[in-house]
Image (tube, rainbow, N blue to C red; front, side):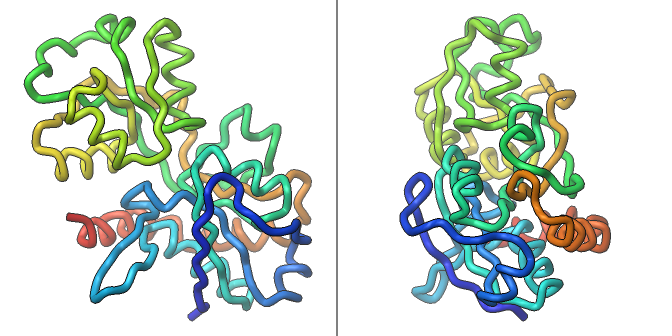
Length: 255
């Protein structure tokens, strides 16, 4: 099994640019992966026995990509809005962070095949659920989303006048909603389920938006070498049927 190194960063992080592509990756013996480890159950920090490690369904995918390439892997943990800049500057080889290949992102990176799809849902406080039966109510609601996320784009498209609160982590997003800092939050279904599990005051509404969610894919540098894309897509083809089970398997690590 590939060895793992974890480097926590703020924004894009420090360090010089690296050459990317299969030859460069194999030459250094390490696949450098960018992600935001605050998106359970896809990637998150798990503390046990005095140790802290990053777990998640995306980590299972990363392990198999590294194995396919015959190298170890190193994780660079950063804020979500720092991921694409890190990829563009060569600080990471790929991004595996439940990222949807939107039109805007495709201008900055190449994307693999989609490996997982989910639906975006609104979550509110239980005490106010009766208010949120129709989308029109959200036009003037203050809604929390992850900065630079697909959910932010959904809000800007369908509810352009709604005040937005931007967050770097899903855990902060849920806590802000539970503590009356906003009216609702927009996240995908697995994230909503975990937020509700951790915060009994929250509940999922029936208001769903999935037409803007293309699913999760792996981002590679623009105009990547075909060999790297081929290797990544090969792993996705092989393990995509197992990914939903990995999502469920990682829920057990979350309180």
